[in-house]
Image (cartoon, rainbow, N blue to C red; front, side, top):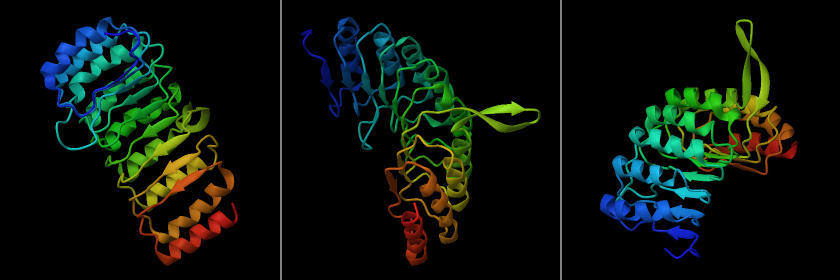
Length: 271
């Protein structure tokens, strides 16, 4: 492969296992690739593991996209491919962007992925959208966030529910045991952008999220689209907008209604 080629975009080519297997030795030997995009190529977990193994010794790869955008020719990583992906994360000293959207990770996959994430101190952008992650998976994932360097996290289209969002909110700061309680806070995580679009949480979830974000000043972009909030709970946005440095708060299709618009308007007015 030409050593001048640093950006390889083969997305949506339906390469399938045979094509990616043929490509793997070339990728393994090529030490100039900065960006590799294999989005939506009908890759199985078996071949994905071979790909990750081939990338372990790569010292230039900054961005890896191996997720799916549409529901055709999907890459099917699942939890089975995660151990090999962890090996890549544990050895990489430069990988910054990882797109795993819609790869059927599920709760078991995200639990396994935590091991690799805490080792990859260069990873700043992680897309886990649409992976059937529930509160069970978030309960494992949220406590390790402060140990990572992740600044942009996409959890959209996962059925997190109120409990999942609560777990996430409670672990924006390291939880330190104080006797039998976890009331003390330590190091905070590094999130600047958080996408919780269509994660199936309601008034209790938004209450806990706002409550924790009041003391969390790093977040600048928050997306809560397509979640349904009870109007009376929107008053919690008042204290949130007063105390944070949010640049963007997106609430598209949240069924706020007239009363919700009034509450939100007041929050913006006094922020």
